Length: 204
Image: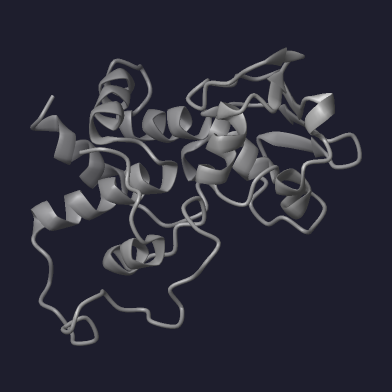
């Protein structure tokens, strides 16, 4: 399964959850699944469906394809940390997510495009790989010729609600510094990690 490119609010309605990394929009106006039977109450989901939904929340919010996400889960499983906690750490350390969290971009897809176009540096070196993993001590900033881009200033100059405690942001200097590795409770939406681990334990 490839990265999702369809209607974003529709996907959030299917998961019954706003995904801030996926879209600036909210499903508040229609907080029920899409389709003619969406507003009606549905029976309790099966355990398999619950596992599927929880892993889809992560995969779609962070914009990973199924194979890419499976490789990340496999890597997390080799860690000494609990697998679910390591999955979150690896996802949050992606450069495209870090730009979103810092406020350089309004969504992760927008951040991914900025990285692909070479607008950002990590420790004064240009990085154009969205999956690049930052580490504690790294400093992320736009290139000098990119500082004035409207796509960056749009969110950077406003009040941004998704900046986590594991980074320090210098708004005036347009620099974000990673001061710690992301903990498991850092993500800005509700997700159960154990169903995700259980889903892939049967497939890896």
